[in-house]
Length: 158
Image (tube, rainbow, N blue to C red):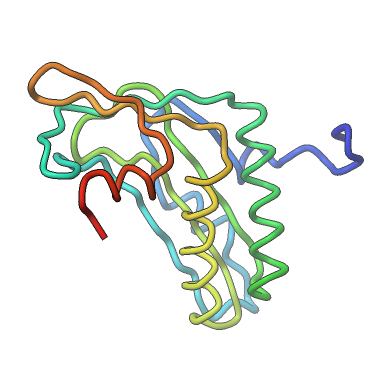
């Protein structure tokens, strides 16, 4: 039990890891005979941000807290979208371009709720989960990412 009386997060469903991510175990975790939809999302390291060329990404986290917060936002999504199971894995350490940083899997009776919950979960991960990203640029400089909205505004994106 945690200090607020809730159970500890399931380390299989909500995981911070240095290992490469594989969506198959997450799909298996959220599958159910009552789920007509399983939506998966993979956030992948891209080669640019705001017109700057990225060499690689680096993620750091407070794993125990991050896994707890992942479980909490999954509860939020279940309440808001009437979905079933959720699993979220996030990678930390150095990621090369093209490697998967985050996986989300949502099982639900209907696809609309699963898609909406997946988008909500990714937004909440960026807002509240204690995971930090450093962009290492091709020019040799680096920058720790702050709030994604502020970064996009500064870079003139969306």
